[in-house]
Length: 79
Image (cartoon, rainbow, N blue to C red; front, side, top):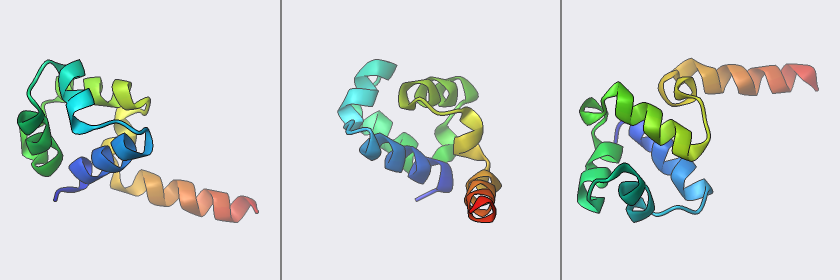
């Protein structure tokens, strides 16, 4: 599984949404959506923006691998 697709999957599950829920919102089939979570090379930026909006996150949170590490480190330094 790719990193962006994995983040999307985790956020989708955290929000209690199924692949079918997001597929319907995107106007695609569930199998097509499932492939998006598995193969990020199939994700166009417009689709990524739609998914980020549905999951209520910024696109940067999905694509920046260092962002999550920086947030965790910042929270630890603030304590």
